[in-house]
Length: 543
Image 1: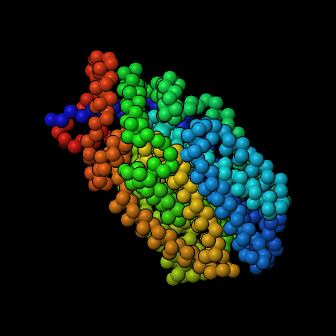
Image 2: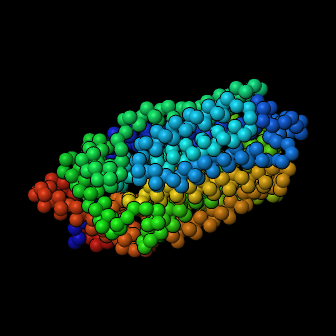
Image 3: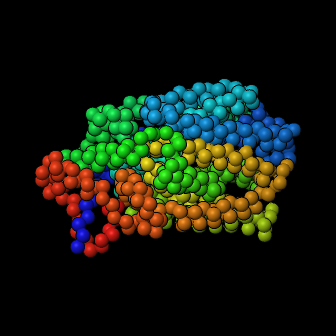
């Protein structure tokens, strides 16, 4: 009989305050969905093309996006956004180290508003490029810091990765996907409503929706406490304790709260003792190298899944495949709604059914099959109505599958892989890598799908089917299962160099040590907590 110490799980309702705080921060990701829907659809709008393109009766919309050098403007308005996000994510670690998460999010709100004003008010392509780059800088901070906060701050160490309880962490971090899809639905609905206008308002109205996020987020941040872990690392112990109280105090008994606080302090003290410095080079030393590479690899699979191609070019791609502009926009709205359903389905699976690793592998298989189906249909029945319907069906299935599996699970898993003291550096640089790969995809995709270039059409999906197979192999061989583990337990597992196979069942000691320390401070706490569980399996996981 083995005595295993574990902290009791609490419901979403018990953690409603923390969930609300994480939801406020996660709204930052809505910008990503709004912009993706807008920019992906604007390229097919006659009103937009009349200003930034030229008339071409041979095209379904009656306009083409650029003459002379096909695709240059088209590639830049998509790729400059990701380039800006790449640059800001790259410096996110340094910025967070000195200024914290909330200041970074407020700065992003200001940059976001400036970028929107530029894009709405200009008819000059160079100004559009500048606006897209500035918007990318803002989006990089929004995505990076909202996910760091969600996994690391809202439910400190156990709950959006830093802030969420361990058993609810995936659900709270998955709010990223929830807000992205809400943004995509709103963006798709707005662009569908304005697509037939032939004036500037056809694209200015969708771009105007990009003011929603900076407005609500900037106001909501006044209600959000700074990350307890960040404050603790900065030596602001009392402020950190008050921040943790604001996040978790209502959902725990005083004894359970004390245990969580002691475990957090103990974990951070041990990390500080293990490493005297906190800097970007530490990500590539000792056991941190494994954790960094896992984080990078998991974030890279978002691009490897083919998501950026579908998100950025789905509406335009369907028009090139032969759909009318009206039908393409309608199917775009339908696909974003399916994506939203997929997000909620995936959140349920992560909470009640599957671990992170299983979710990711399932997603790689499902996404690969939808991409293969799309490519094969274009190969065997090119130009037919059946092929066109297959493109529509497999695109819809992909949107559901990606959002339910890889889209839901990558951020929770990636943010859990890295250590607390290096999370802003590691996650920031990983997201930066993801944006670079997204930029590369956005820049190169038009060469494959445009009739003026390679004209592969849906056959381009063969590449992404193979890419998903590579993702599946990576998930199976390299990614350990972290479901139910606190961030401190994950630190202990990596420090002990536990293999992928043994990660799920390996017994950890940090919770028991924290409980013993609490018992020393307050005799009788263990009985009050009633969190000792007796089981027969000596390798029982505390998750």
